[in-house]
Image 1 (spheres, one colour):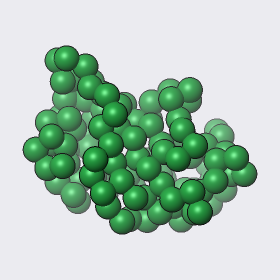
Image 2 (cartoon, one colour):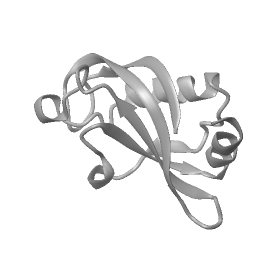
Image 3 (cartoon, one colour):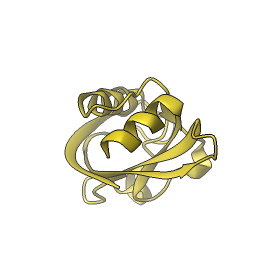
Image 4 (cartoon, rainbow, N blue to C red):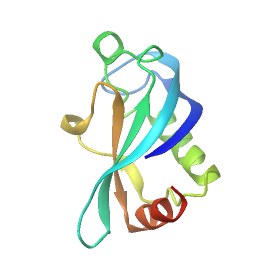
Length: 112
């Protein structure tokens, strides 16, 4: 678990939501990694007071959110070059699910 206090933005251009909003990010969790440590799931938890999936939909596929997430991860010392949204069914009510590769996993394990 990696706690943080950051704000990312949605552009309203995703397939599951047309809402432009500031979303408070509270923590990161590497929820799964395979045995080879070259694939995993990163969960990006958000404050549900700033994003309610039941009212606003999923952040999933919003390009601005992903761009800002990668910038945030890079600023925190992680290699975000192999971070991207996971499938729609992996998204949660309190987090955005992302697929991550070996480069991110290595830097997360070193820095988190």
